[in-house]
Length: 289
Image 1 (tube, one colour):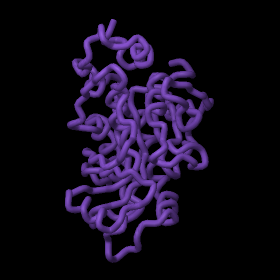
Image 2: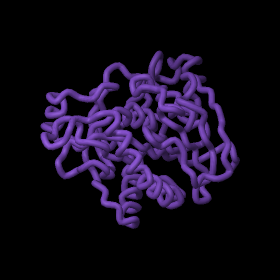
Image 3: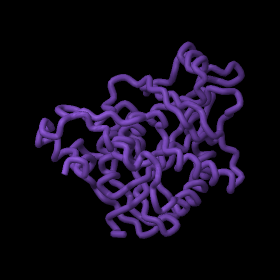
């Protein structure tokens, strides 16, 4: 594969800005129809596999969750050839049995964000992809099996509530999300998961628990200091998982993610504006030719 391409993307969250084991490194700046991504993308090889690494919040953690250029991030990775995305995310726990420093591999999402741009299908084109399973089941299974091999206790499954932020929850909100049966709470899995599905990319979140949000009577309410301290403790675990997951990716994709747009575009091709066709050619071109 070309040095300017990669088949696996890693979106690093808080505390994960690089992977020391990556070799043949080069930074590339990618322009997209949706503006610039969060930062330059680091291309390299990890265990012999080409990987594109993108720091979600930018180097130095300068971009708020509400201001993330997620459409540009996903589009940029797609333009580099990425087919599978592993997202690393810091989250709070909403369950007693999921303590800080736990690893969670969620299988569902609840969206309580407000006003984020969460679809590529706007301004003259309508597309409806399935999000019944918002995370790729194949990737989820692979990450779960990797945790087993490394003897890392991971909570497999659970609902991730995505809040707008950047503020942490009130106690009333935290208790409400617990009443829904949600497992963890965070700010970044959406619209990433939705946009990755529209881009026909497999997507999985590797969530590292840093706190008990603010609902737990036996622990102090979450603070930025608490999140950063526990991230520093857990980030090596995340890197161990990534080192094993990346080379274990199957060669072929036989999940529904790979063909998510098949029969999903509702707009008659004759009525799709030429400007929109050009903007989304990377995503929809094969279905319109």
